[in-house]
Length: 239
Ligand SMILES: *[C@@H]1O[C@H](CO)[C@@H](O)[C@H](O)[C@H]1NC(C)=O
Ligand SMILES: *[C@@H]1O[C@H](CO)[C@@H](O)[C@H](O)[C@H]1NC(C)=O
Image (cartoon, rainbow, N blue to C red; front, top):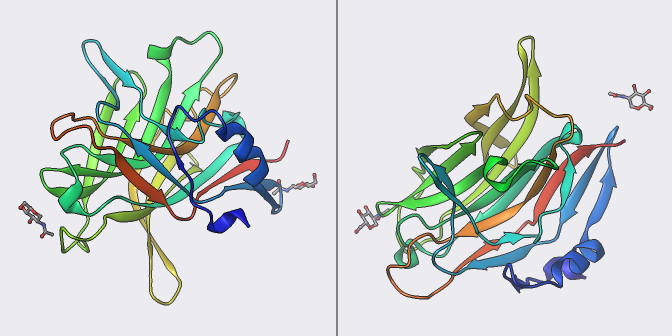
């Protein structure tokens, strides 16, 4: 039914919360629920970003899907995964980016004090990078090259997963780049461990979805359109 149906959207499309409630499929495993959002495409006009840099820059206007982001209690959040493809490199601009957005909010916390993590692909000096930006007080950014990207006429693509982990020292969010091998198995490349993510959970919510941003306006008004061919998978604890 709707699984083969790609819809184009933007942050202005108010129909989405309704579509989401129709298309979300629930599948129970042991004591968690995995929510599957249907495949979608999402476009962003130029002049959009998610970025917080001292002394006072705070951008948070990138389109997301769903919009607004569906939220979960942070204490129930286990894992989110998505797969996406940008347009071919020949059509990309400096800082074009897309991927997974996790937005931490709490009643009474002002916009400039919310926290977030975005992870996906960013086009940087004519190359795609697997890119992760975490923002507790200020944003910090790390990038990893994509050795398999060998032609600018191909579309940078990736599968990314962010999940809760714990060890004897405590709890954190781990971000992985998932490489699917030909034999169907997966390689999990560690990108980042984020220790502040679950440091305070009481009262916090996490909004989860796909995002697309095209920060630079140089190059005209053309939108950046990104395909999220497997939708978004979110695993939460049953409560
Ligand atoms: C899952 O839920 C059952 C029933 O509530 C409980 O007995 C069991 O310990 C839970 N398992 C885990 C791994 O939390
Ligand atoms: C893509 O184009 C840029 C700029 O011409 C070049 O530096 C880069 O090596 C090209 N990448 C590939 C994979 O061909």
